[in-house]
Length: 318
Ligand SMILES: NC(=O)C1=CN([C@@H]2O[C@H](COP(=O)(O)OP(=O)(O)OC[C@H]3O[C@@H](n4cnc5c(N)ncnc54)[C@H](O)[C@@H]3O)[C@@H](O)[C@H]2O)C=CC1
Ligand SMILES: O=C(O)C(=O)Cc1ccc(O)cc1
Image (cartoon, rainbow, N blue to C red; front, side, top):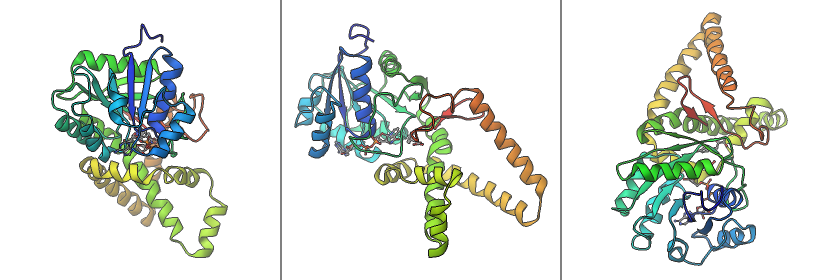
């Protein structure tokens, strides 16, 4: 996409870790005429970002980074969004769109609107990532063929939403819109609770007695190995996700624990039919994901940075 066709002439990225850095690299590759500026509160991160070229310019102050921007994307942990957005007050062009990439949307959209009243806001969530974080972790192809969910809120103008959607398409994503509260429930099922399960099972394994633990490490393969990858995800980011998407996560956890109890009962009472029926149903869900081309068809499948899933009703998760 050339600068003429790109929806924005100048994009500023605040938070130059995995997601912010990947956006910077992707814009530079896919929209070569677009100016990218970046800023991070950590001076070491700014230095790495400059060395890796995550943005054309990485000034020392946030004011310089956003001064001329048409689009500012907040790429910080979800509970830092409000503080960062507040620092932008009075520093943006009046029509500059403020967007973000937070993994949950209701709390983030409310927080940004609270501190930037009157500013156009278009919240979004690229459902793409890895267990790695920081300015060395980003790569330009992260969003290729992955979902980006745009969640318009009260402060969103439909024309601005279209421009942000065109932006994400321009760096390779497939875009969908969703109401913020629906997004948070869908992502609680497909991403947030699965991460909690991974954190739990890996913690349980590591609490086992010494001899068993060494065997866990030695024989870790398949399912458990996948869990260890997920459970290596950034603690700050995930602490913030669970605290910010509290209600949806607790709702899904309640259902999950009821379903777990049902399976526990089937095992206790030797109810093979109940177990078989459950496993046959979940196998079908996996098959429908593959048929939708949401998994192994992806070019970088197997590199360990994949996400992507579809709920039975066709909605996307990770
Ligand atoms: N990691 C993943 O797989 C995905 C993460 N997200 C969302 O993207 C956002 C960023 O996540 P990552 O890039 O993975 O995190 P990261 O830890 O790699 O990068 C976050 C960056 O924000 C900076 N930062 C923190 N507080 C700041 C502040 N007050 N002002 C300026 N910079 C600040 C940090 O120094 C760090 O460089 C989060 O909201 C997360 O929920 C969305 C999709 C996938
Ligand atoms: O690494 C994985 O498997 C992920 O699930 C990455 C991820 C983490 C958080 C998101 O909001 C979206 C994607």
